[in-house]
Image (cartoon, rainbow, N blue to C red; front, top):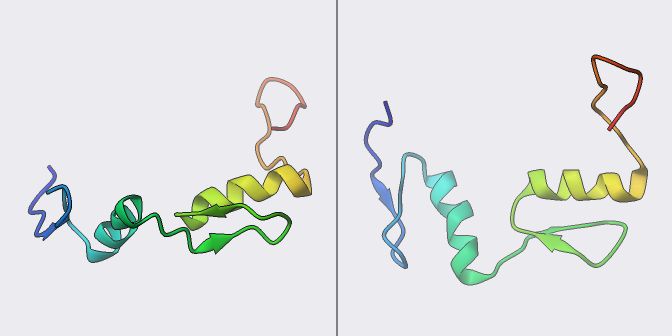
Amino acid sequence: HVGPRPHVCSDCGKAFRETTSLRRHQRIHTGEKPYQCSYCEKSFRASSTLIIHQRIHTGEKPYKCTKCTKCF
């Protein structure tokens, strides 16, 4: 179900379907962390990780339990 993976990492040989996935992966090898938290000094390789991290500072709890009223 995966299909062809024409984009190959020159450092480790891992292959990807999309160039954006390859670029994101290559940050592991380069150490690049382009997404910086506006509240502290931390930086991240992926924007999604930054968004999750920023909840520490904002106190946002976007998920609600379906069994009780607690949010997390």
